[in-house]
Each structure stands twice: as C-alpha cells, then as structure tokens.
Length: 230
Image 1: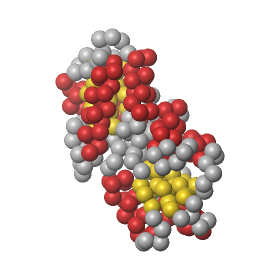
Image 2: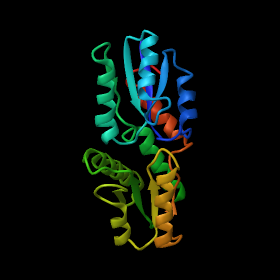
Image 3: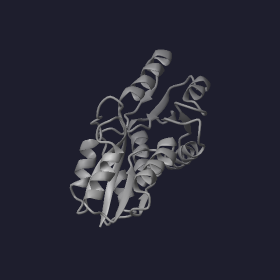
Image 4: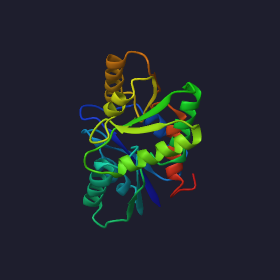
C-alpha cells in the first residue's frame, strides 16, 4: 500500500490555510492514506507526516511537492529530509513540481486571453532562485508555449536571483499584462503588486495568482496521475 504526502512550503509561525482545502478535497477521493507535511514551521511538519504514514504500515511513500518550480526546497531539502527519515525503511519517490503541468500552462493561456488587450505584451513573474537555472528554464519554456498559443510576446522573469522582473519593466514603459506565478496571494505577491503600482501606476493588467483557482487542483491531480489512477 502506498501513502501520499502533499508537501507544502508552510510558514514559520503558523499554518497557512490558503491551499489546504484544495488538497483535502483531492485527498478525500483517495483510497490510500495521505498526510500533509509542511517544510517550514513547527506544526504539521514533514516529519510528522512521515511518522504518521509509517504507523499506518505503508509500503511506499509518494511525496507530491505543492510547489511550482524545482528550487532548493524541491531539489535539496525535501529529498534530504525524506532520506534522513526513511533511511531505506521503505521506498519513496518525489514527484515533479507543478509548473510544467498542462493545467498550469492552460491556466496562463486562458487568463491572458480573457483579460488582455490585443497589443499588450505579457510578463510572467515567478519566485526564482540564485542557486539553480532549472526554474528559469522551465519558466522560459512556459513563456514560449504561452506565446505560441496566444500570439503575444511573453517575457519570463523572477522576483529573486537572476532574470529579475524589474529589468523587464524598465525596458517596457508601455502597459503590460502581468501574471504572477505564485500559489497564494500572500505577502510576496502583494509586495510585487504594490511595487509595480507604486512605480508604474495602474497602467498594467495584473492578473490573479493561483490561489483558489481550479487550475491548482487540476495540476495536483495531473501529478497524482503519474503514480496513481486518480
């Protein structure tokens, strides 16, 4: 019997509830046991989730990271902590992050087609990292696919590390369609929005994050189907 751990970023001081309802909705249809494990904070930790599944005598654990792109959390922290806890007790696997799913691509395309003016270019903003190039390569591929589907110029950019979104904005004083690629509408998404509005006024079309969007549920199910007949 497999057990599934939905891995969220979490928060240091309290549990973030933004996406828990989506996960619980998906998990309610599973026959296998599941847990939710948070990478940050002292509540509902990844370690708690692993212990709970081991107590249920699962024979394999599937870690499904509820993250968009494979930076330090997905490439280092999650596999290192999983290995440290399991130590060959049972097999496990870590699934890919969500940013390359068909569901996310279709969401971005749909948002742009619904909200954009014909002449506007598009800016995609993801978190970014100074440590890995893979997140930017995936974001760039997504931008290319969205450009092909919409016929628009689509610029990939990050909040952190290289390829910063401020560099794109500086080169494009004209109105843009801006799609923030974040799983919640929390602190970081608000900070980016406020900074853009302070510097550029209300000229840009700022689209919503993935919080409370059906596409997030669809992306998680798509990943589950890699290992499960959901």
